[in-house]
Amino acid sequence: MPELPEVETVRRGLADRLNGYCIEKIEVCRENVIASPGGATEFIAMMKGALVGKWARRGKYLLASLSRKQTNQNHKSIESQSHYGWWGVHLRMTGQFQWHETTSSPCSHTRVRFWDKEDRELRFVDTRNFGQMWWIPSDSFPEKVITGLKHLGPEPFSKAFNASYLQKKLKGKVRSIKSSLLDQSLVAGVGNIYADESLFAARINPKRHAGSITEKELETLCNSLIEVLRLSIGEGGTTFSDFRDLEGLNGNYGGQAWVYRRGGKPCKRCGGIIQREKVCGRSTHWCSNCQE
Ligand SMILES: [Zn+2]
Image (cartoon, rainbow, N blue to C red; front, side, top):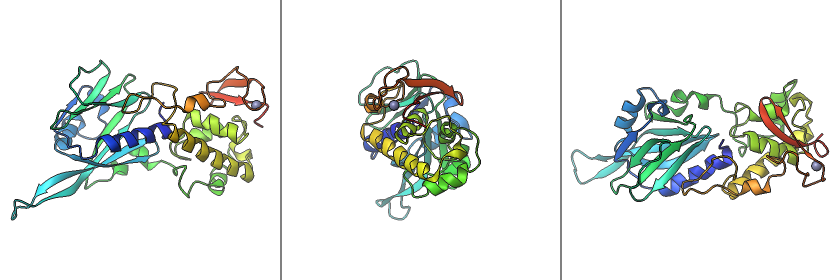
């Protein structure tokens, strides 16, 4: 499943490719992808003619600001752009965007297709079909239409995410630290890979009660998480899972993983065997020697 570094990689790809992209035509191949009120019909009607602006990321959500060209009624030669709404996307398990400069036939997992005047196509492909898209009008807010955005915790790279914040939120909590890190309302964008990797880097056992982690350990954990995410963004995300960026490439972080998907293999730090077990229903990897 794409996590923060992969979604950030996709955001950068979309920002590059769709700079000045004006949506001429849309085809929704699977209607359940469109999660905004009004469904596919309204999505197509409202997105047609929209100029794609800046792309932002919040947790694992992508948001593009949309504008429309307006011709001044009195001076027909004067054109201005007005903010018109937002386009929200969540890739979920297997959603990916593809960029096609030339006409090609879509695969059976194609969900939504966008074209500009030059017939350049942005294609949304999703094998598991959990990915979602929203149209958000300018008189509303993304948080109003995309309910998941309302409950998101701070971004790991923001000032709000620090040891004292975590200590406050985790105080007295008996659930595992692994499960806490996966909770999007605690911190936005972290999933299985980066939870396991940051806990290894911070030398914390993923099964420990969240409330038992000391402030000093939480400080190390914050720094480890930021470091692991930053490193992975630099590598273009991770090689695991179906993740692909717009150009069809997957990232390089996987080769550097310390514990993730390394169950049964020797720990790169101490030589002990990496453990693999389900914690909070998710496959979890750690070294019982290095992580207390
Ligand atoms: Zn070890």
